[in-house]
Length: 480
Image (cartoon, rainbow, N blue to C red; front, side, top):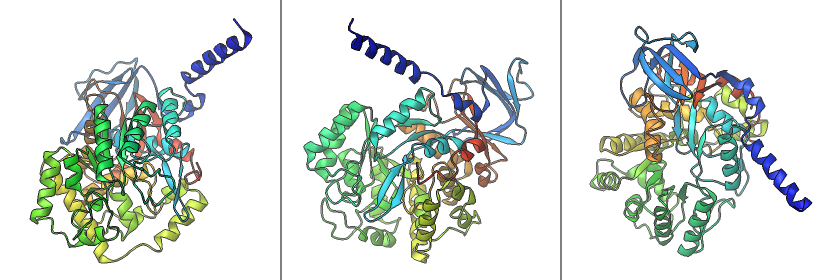
C-alpha cells in the first residue's frame, strides 16, 4: 500500500472515530445522566391536550420513557438516579417548526448570519428538543451542525434541515438565490435533497410554475414543502399541493383587490387583511380549503408582536417580554443596540394591534375547523426574537390568542411532531417514547408564564442544566 493511501486511510479512521466521540465539555452542562432515572412527585402535562396529572412518577430507562404512574403506587428502585420534583411540572420537549439557525445583522439590503454556537444551546436550554430550520442561509453549516449534534460532539436539539429558500425574482436580501425557472426549481430541490435536506420552503416571489415544480419534485421524494408566500395566495398554493403555510394569516395575499398573478403586492397585503372579515364567505372558504387539503399552518406570533405594539389586554405582560433582561444578556452589544433602535421605531398604532388580534382569531378558527396548527418563533424581524426564549413566548401568545395552556403546549409539541411524522417517538409524554422532556418550576396549566421557569431539559434521557447552557452563551447572539 502506498504511503499516501495509508495516511489517508488512517486519517479517515481517526476522523470517523472523533465524529462518534461525545464532546468532553458536555459533562459540565449535565444535571442527570444514568441508565435508570426516576422523576418523582411531578405534575405531568403530556402534550396531548389532556388535563395535567398530579403527583406522578416517570421512569426513564436508557433514554426512553419506561412508565408513568401515580407516585403512591409507582415502584422506585434504589439503584436509580432519583429526582424529587415536588412543585415542578414535566412537559414534552417543544418541537419548533419555524426555528432558523440565523439571526438578522441589519444593513441595507438586510443581511443574516448563522448562530451556530449560541442558537443550538439556547434552543435546548429553553426546552426545544427538536427543530425544523424552515429556511437556511448557510445550508452546509446547518447540515454539519446536525451531524455533530447527532454524534454528541455538539449540544443542541434534534434538527430537521430545510434547504435554502426557493425564492423568485425580487428577493429583498442577497442571502437568497433567485430562481430562474421551474427547471431551476427542480434542480434546487433534487440537489439539496441529495445533500440531506428533509424539507423545502417557498418564498415571497416564487411563481406558480416554480412552486408546482418544487411540490412535484419534493413529493416524489416523500418530502414536504412549506411557504412564506406573497406572490401566491393560500387557496392557490393549497390547490398546487403545498403542505404547510408559514406565519398564519399574515402572508395571505389572496384578499388584495385586483391582485396580479405571480406578483407580490407588498404592503397591500396587510391593508387587505385589516379590512378582512373572518366571518366572510371568502375567509371561511380559505379555511375550508386548507383543512380539506390538509395544509398545516405555522403560528409565529412572537416575530409579529415584536414588530408592533405590545399586547397588554390580558395581563400576560407582553411589554416586559419585548424588553426581557435574560434575552438582552445573551445578545451581543451590537445586536442589543440594533434591536433597541428598531424598537423605538415600531408601530404603536391600534390598527396593527387589531391585525395581530385578527391573526390570532384566524389561527383559532382554523383549529376549530379541524386544521393542524404548529408553532415556531422565527428569530428574524427586528432582532428581538431569540432562540428558545421566543419559543416559550410563542406558547404564551397562543394562550393570549384564546387557547388553553394545555392546548397551546400541544400545538407547540405534539402537533409539530405529527407534521414531521415523528409523533410515535416524540412530542408527547408516553411509555415507549424518547425521554425528550422539559422540567419547569410551577404549573404552566394554571399560569402559562411558569413555562419560562425551565430548570432541566431532557433529550434522549440526558438531563441538561438550562441555566448553565444559557450562561455559556452570554453576549454571543449576533456574533456566532
